[in-house]
Amino acid sequence: MTGVLRDPRRGDVPHAPARRGGVPNLGPRAAAGNRAALLAAAREVFGSAGTGAPLSAVAKRAGVGQGSLYRHFPERIDLVVAVFEEQVAAVEELASAPGVGLPDLLGLVTRHAVESVGFVDLVRSGAPDGRLAGLGDRVAVALGTRLEDATAAGDVPPGTTSDDLLLAVSMVAGGLSGVGAAERVPRAARAWELLRFEVRIPA
Image (cartoon, rainbow, N blue to C red; front, side, top):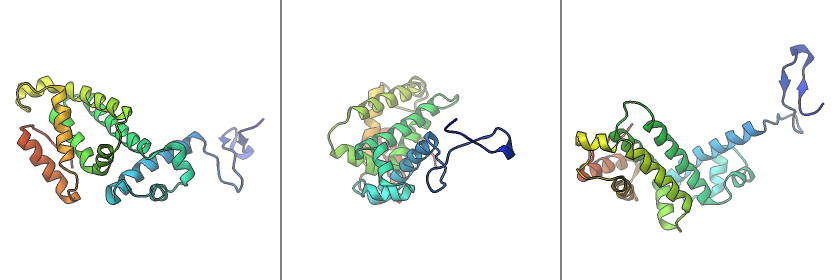
């Protein structure tokens, strides 16, 4: 019998085998935890030091080795795409909740833009990545689920399309480039006001 150790004092409760030195091998759980830690660290490091910050700083903030970082994200753009994908999934989850309107969805997208200015700058400065286009399509679909109601309520200008929503998001996000962290939310709110969109940005 291999792979599972049993402690006779605790019945048949299985225990993960230990690596050399007595450290438990958590397997897939450790990999998932490392990935989540790397994404959180990337948002913090790139948010404060820009996307040009060394990836070693991301690994250090996450508390993992650089080998683990490169196993999950071989290229810098892979890390950026993963952060955006996590944000898109959050927008889709919110869109599936009852009672949520387009101003709420645009508010969450704006919050993500405020917190990910460095990522937006990196995407704009590099070659297009097909994965990012796919994520944009998913955002358009999520926002589009509330567009008809928002138009009827006067939350967006008449005739606004799903493509217009993405264009507006891109314009607002672009306007945050080079803006200090404390000024980003007011700047974004003013941009939406000028575009005549009703948006509720979460705290």
